[in-house]
Length: 89
Picture: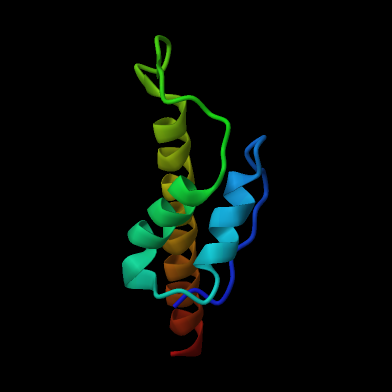
């Protein structure tokens, strides 16, 4: 379970903060659904037109960036717990 989530760098529209707020106290196994649901329900102004440089829509790319950041944070937490348990053992 997430007991909170922080934002270091938010999207211009504020959707990253909104997703982090929704992740707080949510179940970890459902993080993809929580992330996606919050991202898609936020009134973001990003376009659904395909960006030629990205090869994707800006809204979809933003969702992927947020999901990757959540996964990186989860992996960092896992490594930190492992490191702490090794020192205790």
